[in-house]
Image (cartoon, rainbow, N blue to C red; front, side, top):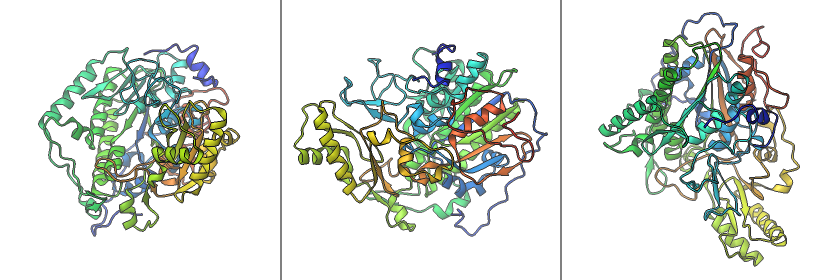
Length: 562
């Protein structure tokens, strides 16, 4: 779906509304030397490669960085910012991806969550998915017609195409929402997985590269696979932990022939994403002329593994090894094609481990959510206390984790005031709650800039508050309270809190010839877009970005003043 650039993207740009890891005795093998590089070019790169690793916390990065020997080791030879921040409180996939290439917080991208509720909508569940076209009768919150219209800010690719329509803007991921939020409104190629292979927007056709990749996926699934290999340095985390009825910590991702779900819910998801990205390099082609292009690649397997098994078992150890190798494959493919490219790698959010394992590792306050904080329970208790009932649907929508709560559309103004007062009182009385904020309060909060680790909780919440979509009340749970009242197979840990383990992510920049540097001061993911824009000589009106350009060149040279 190609959208008009002259009005859309320019309007958007102007703001219009649309612990050390090793536990085994063997010492770590020394990382190989970085590839020999020529002096840093003075001309802009021909291709920007923007990589997101879903649920890749700064903690996970630091825990495994000494083990990286392939692609991630290459990126460690560039500009390393180990304390990047998704500064907002809504640390979910859609909001986080929306900041990476727009350079603005979710309060400006309009992406407040993966899903939000619209109590007045003519849909039974009242839920809207972040990257759907809910006006399409074929679309539902669970089986959505994908469209980028909910994103209210231009991406780097959008701005590049506004400057020169010959720029290619391409994106690929397992998840449609990652593609939409990184690619934006004007993608030339946008691919994600649905069903048994890669698909694209409904008004486009898949290309020969997609057909070839889907054939390769089908072939791999048809044969099945045994256990994935476990690096010898994973021994310290290779043990079972009981999470209530089943264990995690020892799974090796075998899958039976014909089991697409088993294939997709494994580190192999990242391998196939890299394979698709490489096919796109050749089919487009990318980075082959004097106009810069952008390729966004979002890897989803870390998130899948984190949700299913937490982040401190052998499962994540296997995933970190696979991620390193597959990023290396992508970078090697770029090198083999002689493309002059620059890379940035970051994440949409971090993640918490399973609370049962956190308790074993010295986090006594780790717990699962109090059932009283679920939407159904809060609806019942508030209704009982106020005497207010509704005929259509529940009294409240949302709740169950840090995030928004919406009120039933059938309430009048007086009822709404009474329900909000009771809801706030009940939430504040619960020992798992860290803070409770109303929409009226949040509308008055100015989102700060700089030093995101010092932001107050309400400022973090305000950074992902968008009045037209956010709830009437927003609840924040305390540190180490993990959403979900009990663990179930496939879902034992998650993210979404305003705390550092969910907000803090790595930010790595690399280009051939760069001098390695590490800057430990806190930076923000909204700094990525203006930093990349400076590399390619792209300027934008004042106010386009919430972030700032980061000087990623060590020494006297300044990458922000080219």
